[in-house]
Length: 487
Ligand SMILES: [Zn+2]
Image 1: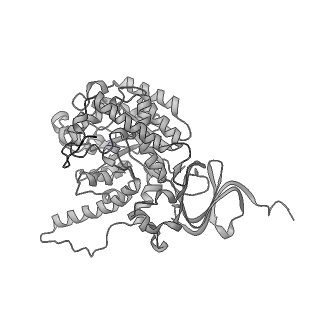
Image 2: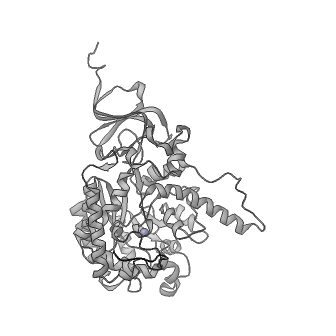
Image 3: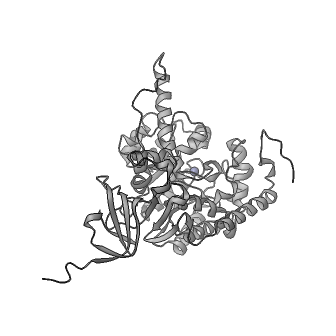
């Protein structure tokens, strides 16, 4: 008999609980385990079959083990202007405080501004975020955001957006293409590692000269990276015909230019023209849905079915804190379902004469579906599903461990995933662990290395400084209903 064959296998961390794998069969192991060695998952299985011994065993009965969530759209540097959109129009805020305040952020300020929204994400189990950074008045602003990302231990796919259209972009923000690409390559060299990747892109098709936009996309193809673009962007709808002489849609324009391809990920993708969803599906492009932000802005015809039912990889994102408020990806999971249902009803009532809302039909989607999009769906949308998005042997150990035993809002367990999604996720103190690449970044609801009170203090102080520095104080509480009394 071989004495070593029965010896327990050694791993670093063993997590036990209800394991929602998000593997291709979508297995949920009611009493399962995930074994982690180094940065990777080495095995997933039923607890009764577990032959592993670990340096640390976590969870147990009454716990949930699931993949970390993936946020596919953000502008993290906007932490210092969070929530200021209320009471303003798009153009008031874009030119009034959004460009000026984030443009005044150098490396340290960008770090301070990005940290609160990053903590919002990671403390509720988001382990990967995309980011689109387009304020390069200070060239090292993007470095500040990436330093904050690195300090949180999260994974990030950063897109450095070059913008220069004089109609959409104030002068100090404009960059020539060569400069934008040179800086992108600098940022790649300084920051890329196993957790951070960097690519080049632009905000939208009306923010950059057409030939330059094509050259940016060409660079991403040559460097085997994503091209991340808002489409349609708000300015597309306003200026595409007037300034580009193009009366078609934004995706039709991208297709015409030869840019619509599998490495393209489009944020929003709402209010598109008939036929454009088919173009996107044929091209193999990807979509970053941002339903919570769309709902806040009053979009009544949100539609993700046109993508999901045609096999377009879709993930869920938040957008910048200026309109994404609590920066809670769980809110976006819930909004994904409610926005689609409202959109479905809106289209039905418009199409059928005399139709009434009855509330008795089978509704779109489920908590499970939303959770798929926020994990493996987001990983596919970011072209990272070979490494993250599910709990499977060989993948990176990006894991959320929730203690369900005190979670009144998640009881009973028969409806666990519905309650998780409609109830906006676990409470902070139930987040026992968040692991990224096997490393603990959150323990018992708190980041292991970052003092969040200090992060808030620094971000609040920055906000105050910037309001005076760029003369943006007039936007504070603009159109407020309340009478504010000085201290
Ligand atoms: Zn955005």
